[in-house]
Image (cartoon, rainbow, N blue to C red; front, side, top):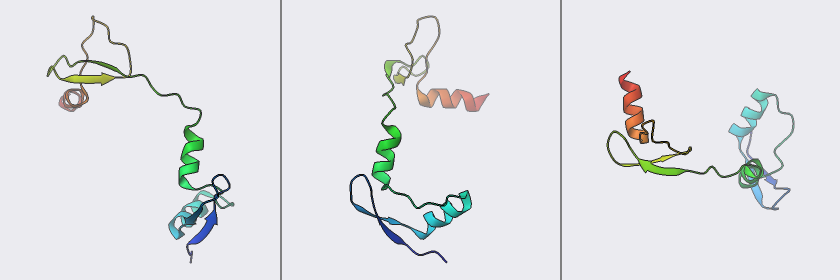
Length: 92
């Protein structure tokens, strides 16, 4: 029913393929227009307004390994690495 279509990105000018699967997805969502930008330009445009999240490095209270967290740790509460946090959550 759908066939791959080669389109030209309006930002970078490169050609990209609008696949049959993508066309089917667009149709299911009710989108009527074809994409005007390639995947890389769409991603760049989507992420342009986002600021990088500051990560803090601390020691895991359970295993003693390095834990990278998106908030400033305080000494009154324990902080866990991703693995230990997931294991504790699964044990509940």
